[in-house]
Length: 484
Image (cartoon, rainbow, N blue to C red; front, side, top):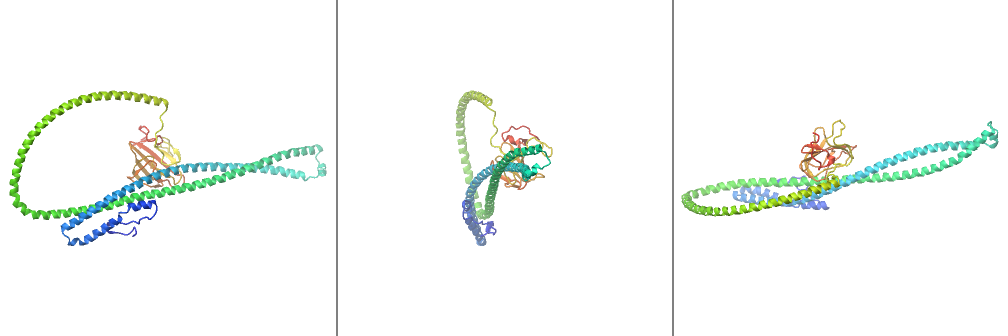
């Protein structure tokens, strides 16, 4: 059956996957569907036959259906635990892939910077070689012109012998210098060829790094889609079973009321005849109970008096022991506090405190505006602005619960995560959000993507008890008032 058909009792059957580890997980998750379909068919047939049933038979049938639904609910709970385990494993894989993507983005940025430097070096060497080539070409042209003049023509020149001799000496000195410059030019050409080979290899590595980054982003996108599908399936199945259970419970309650009313009318006559005898027996029973209660009350009072005296003695003894124990504990606590202060002062003197562990920025990139600096509008920034790569994965800076996700006024797509100890993260600048309100996220879990073009900016603001604090100091930073 296709996923789009309608089935009895509002049940939609989904196609079962046939291969792969994810297919095996989905077969386990939906193995209860044939039983649910059978229950729905039984409900339809029972409804058709309900017109000929008595109220007692109908009540019995509805209670049996209700027991069947409760069994399905327990089976669904077990399947939900399996799905939750798969979701947890999927969340761990997403965190790991996001870290790998961050490392590959850093490597790609380093390769691109190196590629730019090599291209600049190639242009500089080529321009220098072109200047040398033009100078050597001019000298070679002069030598060729002199070499074509015959000796007798040189003697017949209007210049004097001294000038001719001086020109010959100058040309004789120029030839070794020209040969040296030609050798240097050959070496420079060799270096240029080596630079171009290095540049080509660097371009190849950069292209491979870009392909690897694209593959990693595709894999993260598939895992995020799988995570959302599992969450949606679990919630839909729970709602279907809960709605059917509520409907059957209400039907059973109505039938029980009808049966009770019929039974009450049948017993009314017999009850009226036995009423007087019951009242007489009840009066005798109450009198016997009253006498027995008075006897038990006297015995209970004596026992309570004895127990009170015993407890009072034990209480005095316990208070004395407690006072002695408190004095000993106070003495030991004072001694331990003194030792802890001494150790803390020694550790403070040895080294400065290290920054708190666990904090991370939601996306990799260059911080363009820091906390407390003026932003591009001239206002004091309450968070940090990070220039990231297009399409980069955005992760949760700390474990918490999503309390807002979507567009807000002029800020575009924003996300607010509530952490423990009064912390909240506000993240703006998404191209796409991959989570929903009420969802729990782990530290480093992907929660969305940056816009797919240009050099997008992501704004990250951290607040504690409603006051902004420096996000780069992390979740262990002192509270302070911040900047309202």
